[in-house]
Structures are given as structure tokens and as C-alpha cells.
Image (cartoon, rainbow, N blue to C red):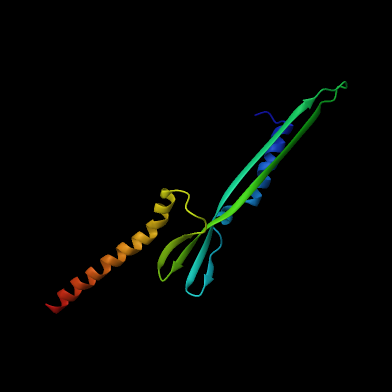
Length: 131
């Protein structure tokens, strides 16, 4: 692609946005509080735009006018909670759809199924040792 002033504006704007947002912004640093570990999760939205034009000139010099800009929105949406070997997600904002609610319930469902299966294993072992 031909290097133009508009390309330089776009590259500069995009690089600045990249500098502001990285992986640790989406999944934050773990916070240890006693036996509980909290990991913040955020939603990031960003956009940018730029444009420019060659300006007419009576001189032989090429004149260019252009601008660029961008914005970033970072919103906390949940915490991953790790406690007593169990992991669950606590959403901060309300569920926007039934699918969001179903996905949020999966870790809790896995924990409950695991708990239901554990007593059966103990009963089988107890019966085997008593024979």
C-alpha cells in the first residue's frame, strides 16, 4: 500500500489505542483476600477514524489536511471467584439475554454435579471395605 499522510495518521492513532489496551486490561490481576481469589473481567470496546485530503494550491507544493481520533470504553462486567478449589463467575451487570444467564450458570452446574457424584463414590468404597 502506498505510504500517504492518511496512513501515517491511522497507524499513529491505532498504535496509541493498542498502547492503552492490553490483555491485562481484559483479565485483570488476581486479588487475594484470605482464602478467596478474585480475578476482574472487563469488556473493552474501541474505535477510531481518520481522514484527510489534498488541498488545492496555486503553488507547486502539495498541501495536505487531515485528522484522526479514537476512543476506548472499558467496563467491568464480572469477577472470577476461586474459593476452596471451586471456580465461579459473578457478573456485575444484569443478564442481557437467556444465553448469558445459561453460560453464567455452567460453572455452578458443574460443581453441583461433581458434589452429587462424590457421595456415591464414598458409598461404593465403604461397601467394598466392609465385605
